[in-house]
Length: 99
Image (cartoon, rainbow, N blue to C red):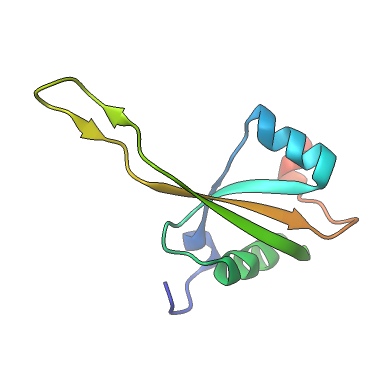
């Protein structure tokens, strides 16, 4: 992902869970599923471009795929990457305000 990519290829989907909503309320952090090869700089730029907000910090987490299926046809879900993005004070993303 070292070449310039479209921000919509980097930010795949928002993560909407109880924990992500708690992070939004308490620390002004929003959570996204991102491309597994995206780095923090690309994620920061994609969020700033897509949502027109100022980003203070980006934290990333690699989520291993869970085993699925039963023997003899066992498999795994794919590896995913999650980014927790802290927005600057006073900034917000409307999508998370309406949820």
